[in-house]
Length: 85
Image (cartoon, rainbow, N blue to C red; front, top):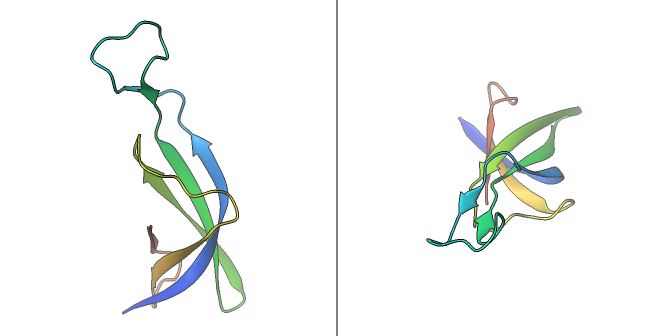
């Protein structure tokens, strides 16, 4: 059974190694470049803290560090969770 709680974004990392070109013709190397992000969220179940990560594609809105986000976790295994943006 799944339950829901809130978590806090503890890190937002830009994936520099994966560049997505958004323009068909470029004038320089970073023209129209977008990069995906990985966010890490910390949430607490009972007295234990857990973390989970989510990959956010290039061009999508990325939450800021310190933002609260809804986390859905498995009641039997709280370390298994997913983030809903």
